[in-house]
Length: 116
Image 1 (cartoon, rainbow, N blue to C red):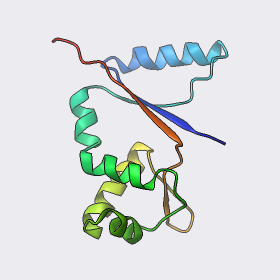
Image 2 (image 1 turned 120 degrees about the horizontal axis):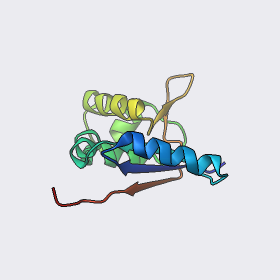
Image 3 (image 1 turned 60 degrees about the vertical axis):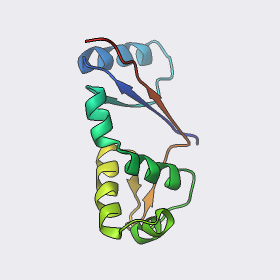
């Protein structure tokens, strides 16, 4: 089964949650959503290094942390730390045997930058 994640930047997270609930109740397929309160928060959590990890792991079979570190040519400890953040955000999942997988076939970022 194909899984899609939509990442949004929504200052009013309650409004976003209510909107998604209304869409789902009307029968629309909403999919999985990860919302950030600001672009600053998005960029602090999804750094270029972490996004590179997602791109390398996405679409591949389960992998160990050391294997991922070798794949991206980075220090194992730093990769481990980044993977922990990606696990917390839900971009990666851990298998029962401790391996890492990115369960999403498609990740869509929906961001609007507006004047303050």
